[in-house]
Amino acid sequence: MNLGPLILSFEVATLATLLAAVIGIGVAALLANYRFFGRDLLDVIFTAPMVMPPTVLGYYVLVLLGRRSVIGHAFEALTGSSIVFTFVGAVVAATIGALPLVVKSVRAALEQTDPTLILAARTLGATRLRAFFSVQLPLATRGIAAALMLAFARAVGDFGVTLMVAGDIPGKTRTASLAIYNAIQAQREQEAMLMVVVLTTVCLALLYAVGKLTARRTEDR
Amino acid sequence: MRVAAAADLAIAFKEIGTAFEASSGKKVEFSFGSTGLLAKQIGEGAPYDVFAAANISYVDEVVKADACDGASKRLYAKGRIVMWSKDKAQLPASLDELRDPRYAKIAIANPDHAPYGLAARQAMTKSNVWHTVEPRAVYGENVQQTMMFAQSGNAEVAIVALSLAVTSGGSYVLIDPELHAPLDQAMVVCKGGSEGGKPNEARSFVDFVASEPGRVIMRKYGFLLPGEAAPPPSK
Image (cartoon, rainbow over all chains, first blue to last red):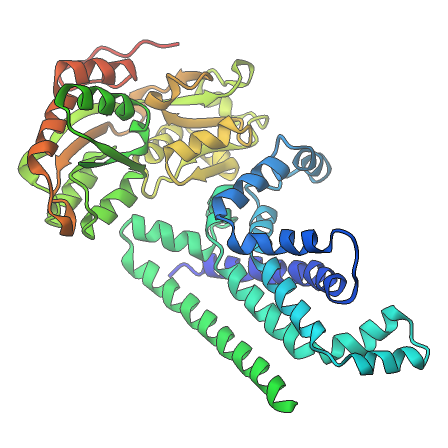
């Protein structure tokens, strides 16, 4: 079997998870710890990809990051390659789907940390930022780990946005979910089934791990 | 009645559908997609009464799967491929010019399951440009999505069906049909999956496509018709 699409999927998902972690944890921290104007709007924007059709998201990516867009054009002028139809495009597509999961779950994990511990750190002279990084974030580690696993599983599984913006290029942007779709249409059942089995196993294993992580957190209490 | 039709028919069949409804009083609904996907779905029992493929081999497949009636199989058109671009200044004059790196992205339909994509790749291979084009190729799920890549300006050139290009507003150049295996498009009456088909209506639709009013419409979209050899007008 051609392992290319599976390997590519895991590469794309790993980068997408990292990207979603950096952005998502930042946004989640803002939402959990601060009250500010536009907070609900920020929440809605970062949750929306969870419920919006992939076609809508794909359209936004093509319009905002496409080769004729300001950002897409500048990116191409700087790097020599476009965002759409490239590995970068596939990562962007996967990140969009993964972000809401990170924001939602990490926010919940941060809000569940004991505020007295953070206040204690503050009375001992820690700045808000220090209290966040050395007390609140470590307390939420389990929740964050679970969130990242969910994000990874979602990123591996992205189909719609990737199909619309990544160009389905073998070896470059043809991820496993696209390769499965192609294999089924081209009547290559076996190839499709093997990839289906691998992806199913990975996703079930991840969900099992997520379950374990979140369950033990409640038992600890 | 439901008709599953290859994406290259998306515009022509809409007009055929309107004309058919007006003349027969029967209602027809279309699903357009890549021929490979539609064949797969029909083989699995999707409720379609007619399957109009972009390549005859997929019709043989659904007949073999016993989802459609082999006796009703009929060639209805021969397709043509073109190089299409949104603005005329960007349109290459021949396949050879695709070697030029200014054509940074060239969109074709997925050759694995879209007959028009396969024809595009065959034509480029035969013209000895495929090895230089391949790293710059992007693949649409079907020929309509391929067109979208160029329409939105994300690909400089798309190789698509003439039938989609004629009403597109962009510019196009015909590709010599000698460069690819013929796009013999065939249609067939299907059993309608678990819902049971409407074979009589389906047959009247297939007949309508082959009738003179149907042929007038198909000709307008650049299809070569069975029994006709004249090349369609170029633009």
